[in-house]
Amino acid sequence: MRVIISGANGFMGREVNALCEKGFKNATCVGKIDIAGEGAIPTLSEFNGEADVVVDFSFHTATKKLLEDAISKNIPCVIATTGHTDEEKQDIINASKKIPVFFAANYSLGVAVTSKLVKTAVEFMDGADIEIIETHHNRKVDAPSGTALALANSVLEVRPELKITTGRSGYSKREQNELGIQSIRMGNVVGIHEVMVNTGSETITIRHEAHARSLFANGALTAAEFIIGKPAGLYDMKSLLK
Image (cartoon, rainbow, N blue to C red; front, side, top):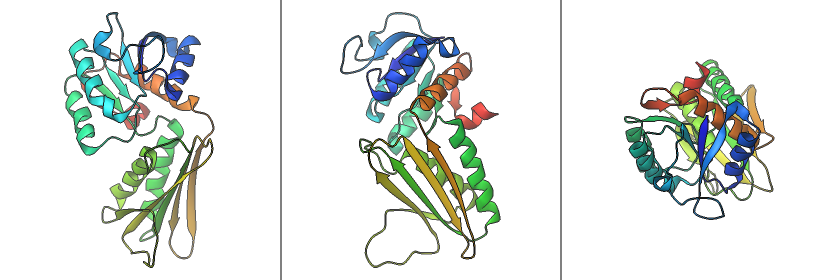
């Protein structure tokens, strides 16, 4: 599997490259894209070799250009960047009509399982108050995290009447239709997500903790292997689990 790494000189890009050097999923890095650092080209359009897939851990504002270049070269893409605007998400959807695109808020298999557990808990705990707490390292710029929002969307599939509330301050009591998300940033925390479902008489807490960033690189390369040879379309962790 010949892989181009976008955002190759960032934290996650280096993790993907390390797995490629170990031969994980028989992956070989054949190209690096980054706006800074040695050994990388600034855009996919300047890549002249052959590749099977692009794995992107760059920045959400770079997604549109990357996908345009991937379409022109007919290369599938794994978009593992978070923080996309609604317009940027639409760019991803549009690109998936022309090439295979794998897009997930989190590339952890454990988070995918957590999402299923959350839906089950919400289905059976009728009318419960639901709060999500996410904790990440102090360098993360987007809040709430993409994973927290993905978990919130799992809740909304069951309770569509809920409205997401981020943060809470001042003199305002919790409304019945709130779905709260609280963000904590500190130290070098890789990622912790907790979903609390409280009926007033009992609470279910579902927690996922990531211990190493390599798990996301592992998931991204697993997704890359999955979409090679697939028809144009939008794929996610649910597709992979099936």
